[in-house]
Length: 419
Ligand SMILES: Cc1cc2nc3c(=O)[nH]c(=O)nc-3n(C[C@H](O)[C@H](O)[C@H](O)COP(=O)(O)OP(=O)(O)OC[C@H]3O[C@@H](n4cnc5c(N)ncnc54)[C@H](O)[C@@H]3O)c2cc1C
Ligand SMILES: NC(=O)C1=CN([C@@H]2O[C@H](COP(=O)(O)OP(=O)(O)OC[C@H]3O[C@@H](n4cnc5c(N)ncnc54)[C@H](OP(=O)(O)O)[C@@H]3O)[C@@H](O)[C@H]2O)C=CC1
Ligand SMILES: O=C(O)C(=O)Cc1c[nH]c2ccccc12
Figure 1 (cartoon, rainbow, N blue to C red):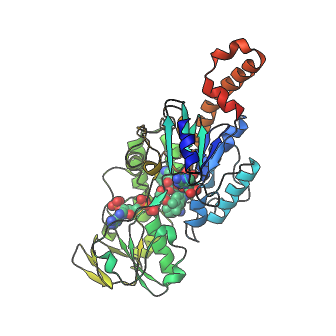
Figure 2 (cartoon, protein in one colour):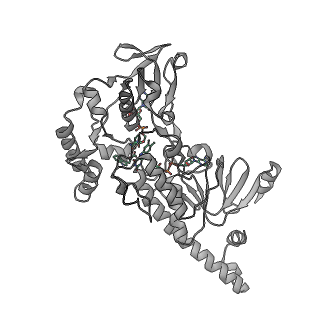
Figure 3 (cartoon, rainbow, N blue to C red):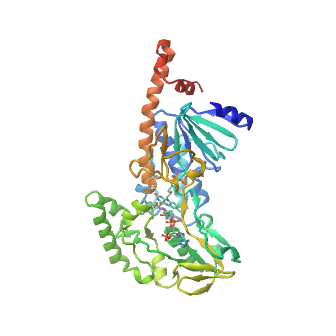
């Protein structure tokens, strides 16, 4: 453990962790910790913020509701309370996550931002560095999420703009933008829902749609579109399911093309699986677009001191800019010398096999399948680690009872057992 000596010099504490280290106390980190604990495996979560589910608590707007029915957003082992509505609010979702953590007695270490994690081939351990400590374990579980950092695009002239420029992760409510002309850059679920919220507060959103986009109704004839898609996928091939979804969307919403919302050639679920681009599930923005309250604009060419120029030559005065330009993983900034992730911080191996890497590395919540994907990964990871854990415990017990067996276990495992 040469590193500990290095860390001592920098006055960092060296902590041997009994069980896996999990980076991130969002739904994914908590789910995997709960599943491990159910199998008798202890774990330690390192979380950079000061609370669990910080994305939901700190980086979402007031009016947010889950847009998939609750049965598709449950974590393993403990479902939503019976009395929750079909589409829980973000406050209900946070309450659920808090009761989940307390039910499984999960106590993350807060204000521990992982700055560097690296596998030490000599010792066979992961060394995980935060601002004040180095944590050491045989297993590292990456649970920092697909939405760890906002995507901030470079837009010509934006530095000259006089008004506020905020990312949707900082947006709380349209009440701060009352009567303003607001440029909303991006038309994913965030762009659509923020534009809708702005309308409800008498602001005038101009939403930039630079590309094609799938808009689907949240429900079709009282059934959730997502639920319909999942049911059909059990029987029909993906492309046929996508065709059915588009047909149903065209019947219920009408064609979206004339509104400036062209559909991509690839179907909605196939596109989500290949690129991660989530289809918009409409909760009311479309009717505001139809009535002209949300103005659809082509790409932005340039931002000026008090407005914007668009690629079609139009110019508009603007009071504020909201960047609804999405999120990215931050894994490449801290996980070093690791071939498992792409440069964008997503596992190179596609779903359903992206949860396990080499040398005790695992990932949870990088499936591009929302919380359902998280539940899938968490169960797989816990089962896999529990098997190793049981062997290690048996091995350790044998060693304690019978010294002649000592060579049958790796020395690092004995070291871990002593911590
Ligand atoms: C607005 C919005 C709405 C959504 N709605 C839905 C929905 O309805 N249904 C659905 O299935 N999915 C939804 N999603 C997808 C969302 O990604 C998941 O719901 C869920 O939050 C993923 O959980 P996670 O734990 O993987 O990631 P996160 O919730 O992002 O948690 C990751 C945690 O890791 C911490 N972290 C990051 N980097 C470090 C580091 N270096 N060191 C220590 N800690 C670190 C973060 O602080 C954070 O607490 C939504 C996403 C957004 C942005
Ligand atoms: N109620 C709910 O449950 C909600 C869920 N979510 C989820 O959160 C996740 C993130 O969603 P979201 O924040 O919308 O991010 P997305 O990545 O889904 O969308 C980003 C949008 O920004 C556009 N964009 C990016 N850069 C530029 C640029 N330079 N100029 C113009 N447009 C740009 C993209 O266009 P292009 O396609 O051309 O790249 C795209 O339309 C998704 O999984 C989403 O489903 C979000 C809100 C609500
Ligand atoms: O990632 C999201 O935002 C979700 O809400 C979950 C989700 C996973 N796969 C989807 C396919 C269509 C719509 C939403 C999702």
